[in-house]
Each structure stands twice: as structure tokens, then as C-alpha cells.
Picture 1 (cartoon, rainbow, N blue to C red):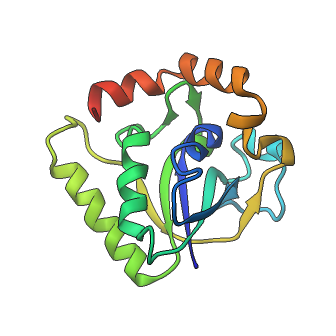
Picture 2: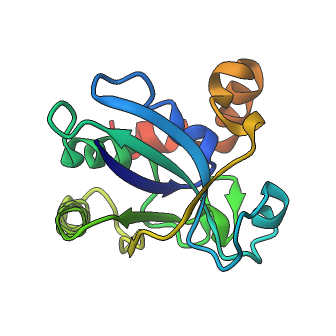
Length: 171
């Protein structure tokens, strides 16, 4: 088993694309990259803790390779937005790939270059590639939000503009 951590704005919207794919064992919403231990949602949403909202994905690389995870990650985000994602604004909603080893770093950088050279965007790619740091699971009510609070999830996602962006730039 291996671990990947991706920040793509609101973690609620980052779980479903990876959830229930063969080879993906678990997807956890949480916080990473900040300067305080065991942050709460209240700490992170202020933007003062330095954390990103992120998802931690435990996966079987023999069934679902890291590069395939990245091919799912990129089309979920606006990699040109350095102020957050869609209607979620602030540093806690910025995009980043947190690598756990040199192979992940190289693969992430390679795919970022591919996205930059794709001609799909007319602004620079600002998604950071950073070394993994402690990951703190979010509170229980954030886990599997798309299943537990389906109506609220769908309403938030629709309001965010994420799906319109994906349709315009990735499909």
C-alpha cells in the first residue's frame, strides 16, 4: 500500500472522484502543510494555520498506479488559481500535491509539465508540489460528506462552479 495526498480546494469535492475505485483502499479528508498540531476545521478555515484542506488516499499501486491517481487529480482542479478553488477562497483552499518519495515527486512534476504544455490554459500552472508533512484527519462529519449529506454536497458543488470549470477546461 502507498499513500498520496492532494489538495484541491474543498476536500468534500476531492473525495468522490477517488472513492470506490478498484485499488483505492481509503480516502480521508483532512489537513496538511500547516504549523500547528492536530488542527480543527475552525483553525484551518481561518487560513491562519498554514494548512491545506486535502485528501489522503491509501492505494494499491499494483492495481491503481500513482500516475493514474494524478490523471484523476488534475481534472478536478483549476491549476491556475493561486487564491483558492472556485468559490472557496484563501490559502487553505489552494492546490498542491504532497509527495511521499522521490518517485512521486518526479511523477507529479512530469504531469504538471504535461498540463502546462497541454495548451488547455492561458495562465501559468500554480499547483505546488511539496514534500509530505503530517496529515491530520478532519472531523468525522467531514468524512464521506458526499454520501452522508448528499443534498448539501450536491448544492455546494453546483454553487461552487467546479463542474462548469471541469466541463469547459477538461472535457
